[in-house]
Length: 263
Ligand SMILES: C[S@@+](CC[C@H](N)C(=O)[O-])C[C@H]1O[C@@H](n2cnc3c(N)ncnc32)[C@H](O)[C@@H]1O
Image (cartoon, rainbow, N blue to C red; front, top):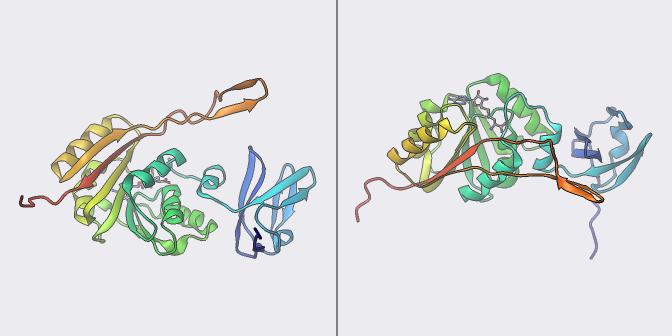
């Protein structure tokens, strides 16, 4: 099998991986330089290389990787709490969305879920992302720009509780303090059989949200928590890591049915 050499060009995103504690997501720009405690990298030296290659730095080596959504968690700034990879990937699976679909979410926050959705939905898909705070969306835009995903996202400064402009969307995803107040708006925006997914950090928010979903025309409602444990792998000392993210939040999912359908 022959591999096609696709050279890295100016404007391409690259994850510079040195070790598990040192990964940097950059966008290649002529004349720029990345400084690390293991040495520096002049962006110009990356042009013409390909993803997967190794380059020399003053205190060792760095690997050039094509960024994936996983890299945003280790590299990009997060001014808000974010949806973690274990929850984001389950959201995609449980919602049944497919590349090319349109999905609405609120709030944008740091844009981590937005970016993951945009990456998955592909060039024909669209994420419509609502937030009440412009400063949050500006940060999220910078993050999305790092992966060249801005053209798959529409950012809106709007309180989603006031209504969703889009109709017939495949899924609505809510990560905001009072999601129960947006459930009726999600119902109006969704295609019949579409999914509402809600992420909440406390148990108290589950009950209010689920009761509201039951009242508003959702079925197949579940409240779940995902627990992920990373392992340290050292010779003769393989065991769960004793530090890491212990709690993220709870996921609530349900499907829209058509109210009042005759039998
Ligand atoms: C926890 S952050 C979202 C994090 C985001 N999901 C991520 O992965 O980066 C919650 C966001 O919801 C926004 N928000 C709160 N109430 C809202 C509302 N009624 N409509 C739209 N956005 C809202 C906040 O401004 C905040 O940016």
